[in-house]
Image 1 (cartoon, rainbow, N blue to C red):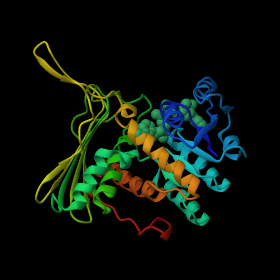
Image 2: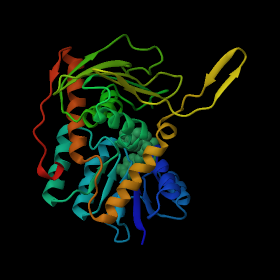
Image 3: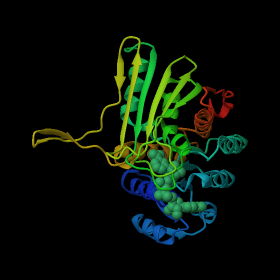
Image 4: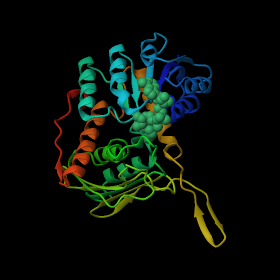
Length: 335
Ligand SMILES: NC(=O)c1ccc[n+]([C@@H]2O[C@H](COP(=O)([O-])OP(=O)(O)OC[C@H]3O[C@@H](n4cnc5c(N)ncnc54)[C@H](O)[C@@H]3O)[C@@H](O)[C@H]2O)c1
């Protein structure tokens, strides 16, 4: 019996998750969609092979026909929608960030803890990427020795007009913040942000790029160049330096062409192309968790922890100081 999935928000990510669920996730069927933009919702419903269209997301969440919910609407809608799913006792896959602020993330954590069982999986898809998984295995094998530095680059072609300077931390670098916690298995302890002049290619009002320096409980330094108006493509790089060697994220596969005196490799246009395999793997894991009655993968707590660090980064831009971060230990549900 297939899990009947309802998808809330059918924009860029919602449409992509529907395509992935239809093409690459056995055991799931998209039976309902919700979006205030009717034209988008209709198109998404067709792509799902004739799903029911709701204008009101709460109606979809409450529908007896829907077993599990994917949330891909704007950040500020995540908290109330995830809380509604928890109240209905339905497994929910929520796009990152878990909520727009750390305080809101904590309210979601509290609601899940009160239910006593994990129902929320968060969309930190990079944990499912074979390249990052290979880096983690290499570190754990001991071949490169104990870690010293994690160097990260996060470049997007361009940011949407609604993207704010704060979202550089809460929406973009939040992926590297989560990776640093997951890959190195330690909490982050401080954040510093260096701000070069803004790129002339950034849209007015957006302070871009930024250079983030984090430290973790093992005194490993993590640096993240976050540059969302990089123009040439979507380019994600990562290298972990250990005491006896280093390990790097493999470049995405591309043909190489040689012509007109130059060697040429393609750069992905955006995250959907670059992490297609990871998006499919995270949704397969979520559907498997839903079938098993308890979801795994990145948790609401991971979403909260990442948002605390993203907020420390924002504070660091205001004061120019290194901001200490301290997280309480997670409730037993997340250990
Ligand atoms: N994991 C990733 O790599 C990744 C990448 C991009 C975006 N995201 C996240 O996905 C979410 C959606 O981003 P997007 O780029 O698809 O945005 P988008 O603007 O393309 O799509 C959002 C959709 O939600 C709809 N919407 C607005 N309010 C709603 C509501 N109350 N209920 C239901 N639908 C509503 C909009 O009409 C729109 O169709 C964001 O939270 C973003 O941070 C994650």
